[in-house]
Amino acid sequence: MITASIELSSLAVPSPWTARAITAENFTGEKGAGGRATDGFGARAASRLGQGWKVSPCVEIAPGERRQIAQIDGPGVIRHLWFTAHPSCWRSLILRIHWEGDPAPAVEVPLGDFFCNGWGVFSQVSSLPVAANPHGGFNSYWPMPFAHSAVITLENLAADPANVYYQVDYGLGAIPDNALRFHAQFRRSRATTEGSHTILDGVRGIGRYVGTYLAWQTNSPGWWGEGEFKFYLDGDAEWPTICGTGTEDYFGGAWNFDVPEQGYVPYTTPYLGLNQVLTPDGLYASQQRFGMYRWHIADDIGFRQDLRVTVQALGIGPGQGNGLGHRYRVLHDDVASTAVFYLDATSLAPEVRPAIPGLLDLEVA
Image 1 (cartoon, helix red, strand yellow):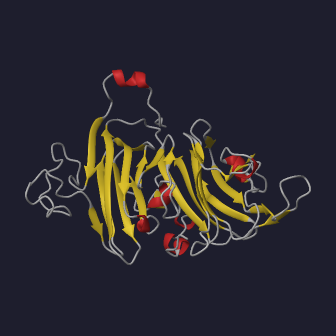
Image 2: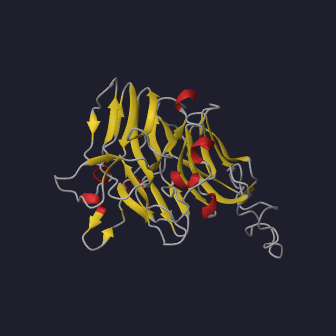
Image 3: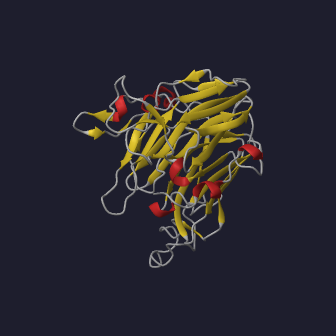
């Protein structure tokens, strides 16, 4: 696997990559073709200045349209993605990435959820592989190697057009023979059943699980984060090999994320964070909503045969505190997850890829 971090000392030697970038002003990434657009969204604004002056800064994606953002012939590696669009589009724009000509996507995630902003309300994220900057500048540094081809698309599931600004930075050059392909899968439980949400299931092969983002909405009063993360590895059936101690613990927090006299305290770090806390406003906003991420970069979860990941929806009733006298209760919360992993396959079997439109209902709040 190609590492996500670059040591500063490595910058003092020649790069192994031939640098290229695809934007709305250079759809192919061709050498010497940047900024040469003669028509586009900014043509009127640039009419007095002409070619080379931001003629095509973005693309408009019509309702129901699936727009190709990039098609790259390899070998090479996608090194950086940057997107921005109006917040109302963040869950109705579906990001898909296909490897090696596979018609099935390895990545199929709403744009906002891929960048840890699933609720259509901006949240700062300052992590190693993902940065979300004011106001909706979405960046990914996950390394994405490919041997022959990479295709990136965006589908607009909303009823209105979406203007999308983007840049795909990639390097052309040899990749290791055993390089794994990048995957990301979105799943949503509108109301968790039997106290559990499945984050990932049906993964077969050799790979590394490297990250989780959760957009969690509470539908009951009280504390909602007692649930354990469970990783079923390489033949595990009833009992997992890795089982955590609680939801806030998995994301590197503790004791309900609750600082006395301050309540929930958001944080964002290179590997994990509670990056978003949204509370009802007393008028239109509904239940409390949270955004949390954990990247398994220094502690990746390797598997050789198969993988399943779940999280319990487990809480404590209001007024019970978190001492030994409380009683747990199963919750029926709205949980949306994005699982990030590398695999020795270009896609998953159709039966283990949930249908995106049915998961969304185009509702974020």
